[in-house]
Image (cartoon, rainbow, N blue to C red; front, top):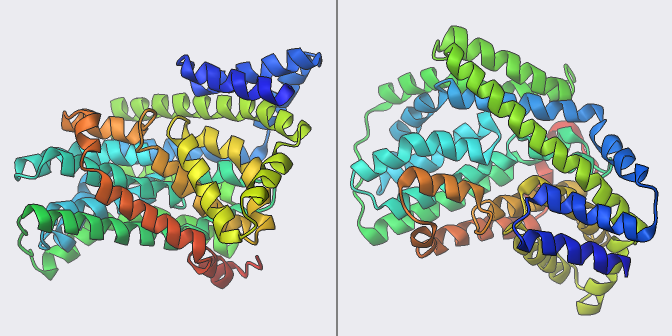
Length: 430
């Protein structure tokens, strides 16, 4: 009966339009009151969930991404991408994919990525004669690669939701190949649509111009190298790397590029504070939810249910993907990670999947949800920038969805995509 109350109240609040964080918290409170447990349990679980040292990385990574967004780094990355691949058929679309991948590496946030790249690339593509739906779809889907990059705070959230079963350093190394796979799949989709619609190719500016744009963008791109080198060499931890990222970004935008203004700095700080508050609230209320799921053995129940459908690992992985995709359509990325990891990670591990590989599966699935109504944050931002309705974009979204699902299938069924680099660089034994 307790599980029915927990599930029914949670989905009921979501249907009523209650924000996800409050829906999670209120459903947990209703269940605790029904159980007759002390109300103090609520606050104890919330505080224990948020009072973790590793969570210090979250505000730093968020702040670093916002500084990159407001510090003018995007323009230099766009120019580099345009010079590299702009001469291919549908050149601006291809440039958009590469630019979103590169900026995702320095921002670590799909929403920041689509905000920065969309503001530059979508108007540019419309001006050059590209259809608005194409410009928006390319931008919103390519921006999702930010969830897999070393600066992604969602990796921190997953590592802690996994209950210490996976190291943050291994996750950071593991995200690079899946990010590359995702970029390649998106390039194929963007090119295929460009050929079908007859979009033109640009002109190659020459290798000297490519070299100049690379030199201009390199200081911004170095943030990924600094984080990876620092963690892999043991100079600093993953948490300390986030603080290093903020320090480097401040020096970069104020003193090297000289594009940061005081007004933009304050705007970036305010947005980072707001985002951090939302994430920590989600973490706190999700800890209550996880406590109740552990109390009622939800993971064991879900595992038994899946085994009744099939005992084949490939089918179990497929079922997990489908469930995560459906949940991601109406839940925020952080909330999905926090709630679903304790349920599905034990099931996936029992079926033979490494927790690092499952982390990549989880992040891509949750990123896919960011581009799926009714709670498709990146899609809403992209449509707002492009001045087009979500319905119009959804009518031509299938090639880009197919690219994302192809990347997801590679990561799900080919462990080497997630585990090769952690084993090579860190001696990971998983």
